[in-house]
Length: 182
Image 1 (cartoon, one colour):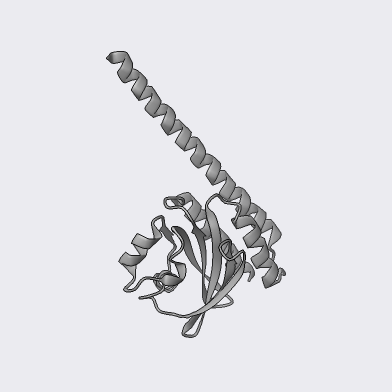
Image 2: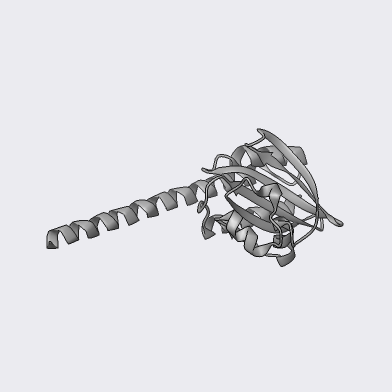
């Protein structure tokens, strides 16, 4: 019995080590991709090229299927991004309504959010479901400023429990960089 218990404990420890190794590899991949983006996108980079570079690199992250940058213009949010679902660049213009838009909610509270169960967490924060993003399972939303306008960078995934605090912080750094150059 003692040997079986020790073997079970050993298996548990091995699994924990494997999970930590995967987590480290994922974190290194995030940092590598963000470093590549920062080196490609400079102050003189045109907006279309910024979107293209972001879409090319961010979608290399496992599970990431879309991103968008939203900018508040008066009573509306204007989004541009890329989605694997539509296999192309996307744009949208929606009312700025923190009760019904997760992006507006995050911008109003002026802090980054990590959503690993997007549907459940969105229902808690909003009065009505944000149908525009209902197809995604997880997201990271990071508010920033673009030319003195409120803006938000959101990265979407097709898997729940994909993101961690390290990834959120990395995207926060990237959003701060975008704030400085665009």
